[in-house]
Image 1: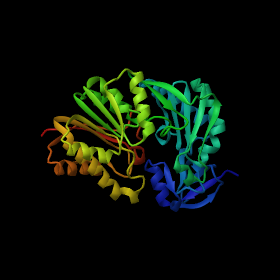
Image 2: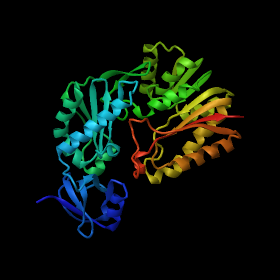
Image 3: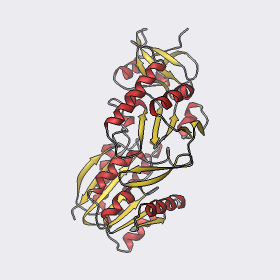
Image 4: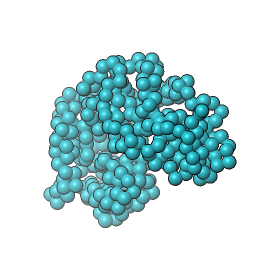
Length: 387
């Protein structure tokens, strides 16, 4: 018997409206086990399509395909081939980038990043976790990867009733992998680094910011120095700040290997450091704010708003007239309109006149699916302080 799930009218309308998720509250009946690929039908028995089913997560269904074709391994292969062909068409000037971006590539809850000749995968649902053994040989065949590592350690897996683990799925993946982004070479820690090793979604924003870089640069929440290393060749001085001692050591090492002697990495709390430098009367020609997600859920939004307002206020006060602020938010729960209001409030409090030079999102290898606002999570604005 084919596993099946019946959804209510609201769930059906959601799927037919272009969203790929159905929440547990909109499931009327489930005749399926954890991780099954199920036939989805509406409240009146009308077929809707095929989906991954979770018996634990609030996201009960993740739609794979319409009812006109089976959601078998052939479908997954075709979607993987399409995702690879799209990335090839982008002519990305880097050896580290996203190959598969989940729902936006028609492969819900599957993330695959390429680091040189290694792949790092994340299975973020029961269904993809079950399918991984069958998908890995296909990936190796299509990409010629030397090794495949599963970074199945995100906390979201706990919501699926899955354990958090890092494990080698195929071949060999060294602890450190050298990758290139434009002219800059980084050392990526695939086994223990943030996300899958590096923050790949900011690549194009770093390139865009470099066009405005000059004078003194302050790069806050630098992690491994992504913005600082790309912008430093155009600046007289680049100060990269992060609270993590390990991140600062990695930034300094990356600067040395790229011959960027003007980069100075500093371990400090960014909130305190911004305030200290403002009180000391320092001024910069560019400030970069690329913080971690301050609002990982709706309950955290009020505190997050205060945090975003504070760092942007301090950054604007540190900028000389004519200087640029590159400011980012990767909190999905802070949408573009709300982030814009925060920036306006910060500018008013700083008594600064500010213009928007560029309004950007995540890199093109992290596409946004129309109908699913959850896939549009990264906001990046390049602002210019007039006075």
